[in-house]
Structure formats: C-alpha cells, structure tokens
Image 1 (cartoon, rainbow, N blue to C red):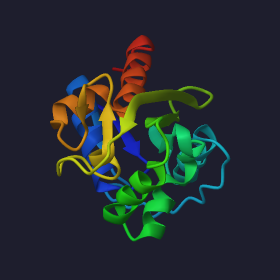
Image 2: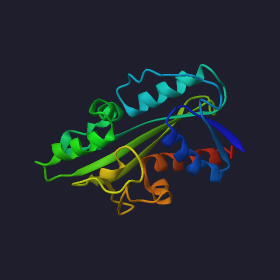
Image 3: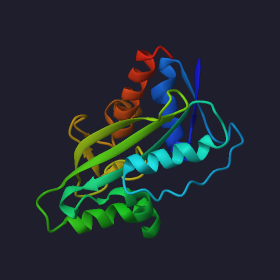
Image 4: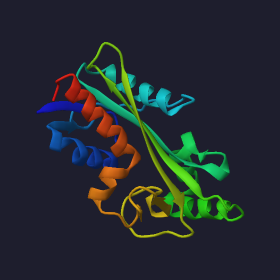
Length: 197
C-alpha cells in the first residue's frame, strides 16, 4: 500500500480522498495521523500557488509523499466569484447555509447561471519537483438548495456531466465527476505511469 499524507484538517475532504484513492492501493493519512499541526497561510493568487503553499508548509515536517489541494467555486456571471475566496466567503456568511442562498440571490438578475468547481492538487516528495493536476467540473447554479448530500456549495450546484445536483448525488457519482475527483484521477494515472502504485 502506497502511503500519502493529505495536507488538510477537513474531515469531508479526507473522506473523499480515501474513497477515491484507496481502491488504487493508496492509503491516505491525515495530519492528525502523523501528529502534525499546520496552518498554512494561503496567500497565493491562484489555485496552483495556494495548493503548492499548503504542500510545502507540511513538507517542513516530513519527507513522505504529500498531497495538498486548493479548490473553489467560480460563478461566471459574478466574475468567477467567489473563486479563491470560496471558503472565506462561506465563513464570512456564517456557513454555507447562508452562503448558498446569498450566491443564488446575487445571480437573480443574470440569465447566465453557469459555474465551475475548480481543484488543483499538488504532489510533493515523489518527483524532484512538485507535480500539479487540475480538475474542472462544469455546471450551473440552481435556483434553490437541493438535497442534503455533499457539503459546502454542493446543494446549489448542478453537474452538467453527472446530470444531477451534487446535493442529491450519491458518493459514488460525486467521486467520479467532481473537480476533486478529476484532479485525483490524473494523480492516480501519474503514480501508475511512474510505477509507484
């Protein structure tokens, strides 16, 4: 079993990665598993930069393989807002139960409801240089909250490829079509190509 450390304290994210990667022989460890306390300052101007910052921050403590990601929801009509500030916007609103209706409200005057979930995974301590993978999940913002599945902005996002609102999608569907899944699929292929798994 190939062990990899996830640079995150997000329980939802850890669960998703374990579901997506363990079938390929990749054991995903958390920061807690390794006794690492880290709070990286995500001050980059792109998902690529923030993902790399998170990976390198944890890389100070271990030389084992590390993955870190940065992700966001980009609503086209709102100038790709909230984008890099996706998590911060939800926090400022008091959680996604308030952030999701706020996104819907801001979109009311626009006909274009298109949006993309974006994710960049950085892999560290496997090759000489960090390797990065981009996953994009296209969809639209719904006119109300649907379902109680997923987390974050999932209940207001309809995936074009999965043809379902992520709030109503099964874990299996989401782990095939989500932005994180797409980046993770590229990660798996890379590790297979270099014969690490």
